[in-house]
Each structure stands twice: as structure tokens, then as C-alpha cells.
Length: 114
Image (tube, rainbow, N blue to C red):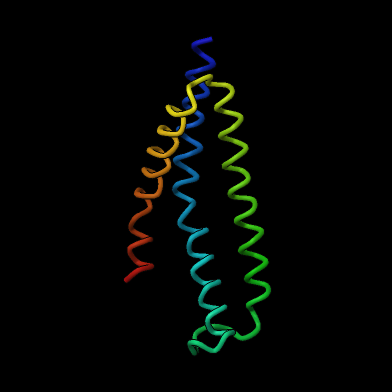
């Protein structure tokens, strides 16, 4: 029983760190989608954006985020049931490890905002 809990906790740590690391790419997709929407509405003219890519980029962003967020949700639900931890402890573990994954990819996020 302890081995199953330890294995579930280890998998939780690895998966949430990986999801946190990959979150930056989903965030970038939404930022670029926002730029395309703003240009389509005529609020900003950005000559670096390609014309006619709003709909394909919207579809790509929605598909990627659907796969990403559904994988996070279902993986964590499955691992929570296997570890048999209290929900509040499990959520704290997820938030801390996910945040560490996001912060470990901070160099690329810094480039985005500069």
C-alpha cells in the first residue's frame, strides 16, 4: 500500500512539473491568438503577423489547450484516487510542483515579456 502511494506521489510530482513546464507554450499560443484577434478588429496593425491565419491559429490554440487541460485534469484525478491523500493536501502538492515547473521555464517567459 505504501509503495502505491509513493509511486502515485512520484508520478504526481513528475507529471505536474512537466505540465507546469509546458504551460508556457499554451500561454504563448493564447498571447499570439490575442494579437491576431486585436488585428482582426482593427485596433492594432502589426506588419509581422501573416494575413488570414486567425481561424487556423484559433483552431490550433483551442485543440492544444483542450488536450493540455483535459490531460491535466484527468491525470490528477486518477493519481489523487490512487494516492488516497486528502484533497487539500493533494491540491497544495499540485500547486507547488506546477509552480516550480512554470518557474523552471522562466528564462523563456522573460524573453516573451521583454
